[in-house]
Image (tube, rainbow, N blue to C red; front, side, top):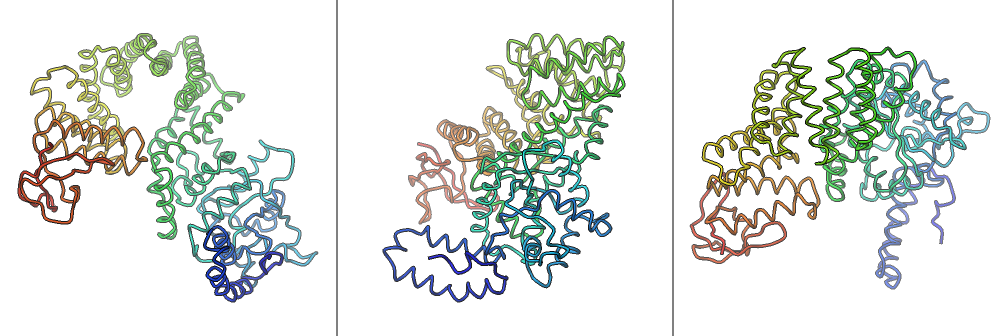
Length: 603
């Protein structure tokens, strides 16, 4: 029958008392009524969900599904404006919400709905939530409300917005989540029922939201539930964003977004962060989630940038800068036809204004867009980039950093056109200039160029010893830079190790090559699922490498079976990913790098 708390509003103490009284009875039922309980754990798991709701103070009318109306949110701001000025959302929660609900130990939603009619807080309206609001507690609360106001004005909809904002609808007197797996299931069901999520980004150029584990969890769940996603920035931040577009700094966000790494997100409680990270690694992997976040946020800012184009009062220079930045946003999200039309409009305006530098920048962008359109456009891209280099060199000089950037793009398209000699010369010139300006944030560009030079040096069918050694030095340099930027477990680090392994094998350094492949395989498995092409391809390369290698050292844990000490001549299976290769142990165990390793020869 119905559970005793399913039709009544209960206080936390009442809920806990009922849970304690019924706990042993539920376990007894599970044992005695084997026909019902042992055949399915679903019903018992439902009890676990109900218990979790009780502990969270969410029993009865389930405030976890409630939302505060948009009008009530504004009324709350107006009623407590003096107390809210200058405070973060976390401070509002501690100084106001918890104080108001301290006697009842309820969520603010339940506290208001229980207030007798006519009381100050009975006037606040709560109903089934239809918009989930994701934010960081470090946000200024008034800016958060302003961002929601802007969203509602732009999306009036057909009815009242009831906002799921955690400090209003979740009991803030519970110090931590007692059962994260069960709680996450409840939360997922709630978010699916809400049906729409709004992510507030503050500040626009480096949102705190992207560095908080709980915000990451909310985005992950929203993606898993396939609900509608929206992003918003308050009007003050939108003004800053437009100013950056007008001042030719709009791609600041693109540089920041490229380095988003949600694996480094933080939480107040380490246990929460560990649970969330485990959930992501188990279901989707961080590299995939990072790409989803960057893609969605780029689309949002592209929309904001296009809206800025329609603004009146922009000067000619400002309008040209906005066109340039809009084209870059469009290119980054894959809208290449729109990007080409936008940048051609920029080039036309620059020519009419007689602004050669602005025209050169437009030509460079056009070259990059054409290059992304495929091989049939490579020659056209080369022509545009060549024109850009000539104009900039004439005005700025050959050693200018902006000229080097355009030369780098030109070298890239020359490499695609198999004009390796010219591409190599351009890459070398760019590298010299970039290394002289490394302090200006060109570390990643240096890493990319070194990798490109290494690839060209290895292109010939029979590269000479000097070219191979130069390529090895370039790949090592790129690897060091990528580790410096992203840490040891990033996808780009794994790619650099794979390239290094290739040149090491061509130099006959089989052991070093195998170790680099092994390290790259571990990184790929850390970031991607087992069936991802990076993981599968790396393990296939390792199997092919082992088949052709004469002898390599491997860690003892990699050999099967592992119940005894191996001796020279033993036949063993070497595990590579989800497969094995057969090998013969060719040496006694040796301590290498702190682990016991054997030399093996693949049969």
